[in-house]
Image (cartoon, rainbow, N blue to C red; front, side):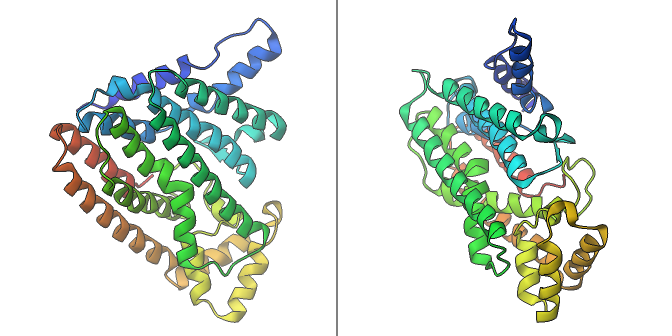
Length: 329
């Protein structure tokens, strides 16, 4: 199946539900800012998962379009807030919104997108179960983000692998894979296969770990700042593994460099951390964990797929999930 028509429909519908023009110059500028992140042509993977899941479960993708749009709007307002919280420099190959217009304005734009998300989801044609799924997804995402941010605020570097996996399950796996698959099935009005959640968690974890690996790999087309996770001292599986294996002296040196504010970190700091990551094989370890999770999730998805009515769309969905978990950019 050619996915381009779905991507076009998703993008066009998302921009259509956002405000277009206002005669007041300042509000017209505000409307353009609301469209800024949605117009940056992200991959729209989460929305596509909703549409393909709906079709694979025997529904029509058109019936899931507004739910998919709601999910993409969620992704965009969360990214604006996330970039502020992490003080990221770039998003999708361009300056982060708060770097362009300042934190207060960017924060307000994210809040506005949040409202438009609920406006889309509050239509009578959308089942209440869909809104309940969204609420659960947003709660988990916020919990995961809090864990991530609190470890940085507390200057914690003794995060265990179990803690890390719990954090990324909440922060990334649910809204990236678990909820999109479940939402698509809900739009098709079929009984949920609870195995979707287990498969989605494994694939979502694989996606996030691959993202962490790519951040340190200078991959062309990645769209984010190289080593941004180190500048932000993000507790990735790579750092968790490094701190579990480094000597006491090395840990002290690593903490001293990582704990510096972003603006005070030097290229020498980043080079030292990268050298230790290479020395202890932490990047390779993370990649292996990602591959194991991807294999587990895909195996279960393929089992579930055998029971679904639309086999051609099931193959398309499975292929897209596989590319997600093994992404190279």
